Image (tube, rainbow, N blue to C red; front, side):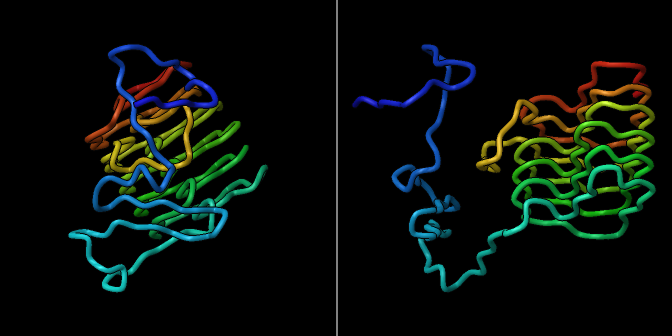
Length: 205
């Protein structure tokens, strides 16, 4: 059989390097998989044991993020909430400082549990349970002074959580591009790539 694609993947195709096909109805091969046809706005789902969908509750998110902190919004606490099944991130902040995220449950999002875009300073993420993310558990872009402690992060960037949202940060439990971070007493299990990644400034683990 011959497969023709319009463009190659970012990292190219090579003999011996595996790949899989997704996002077409014809590619559903086992229970638990689904496909959304945007032209007809129809969801096709292969239910466990090939049961009828009438026997199940099916959720579809219409929100990109559970919480969005807009640019230059500071001094905010997000606490004791549950975020589940969001199209991109559980919590998203953009150029925000002095943010505390604690004791939240974040699961089954296509992007990241907590995503700090652009710049963020003086951030505290503690006591959160983050699981079943397609990309990363916690991502912090540029800035300074972070405390990431006592979080439970599991099942990040695994194939069974594959989704439409993609980046270069898949499979990372905690990713920090800024400096002066303290990462302590976190439990990180089952990451598709690496548990902790940092590349600038001082980071104490």
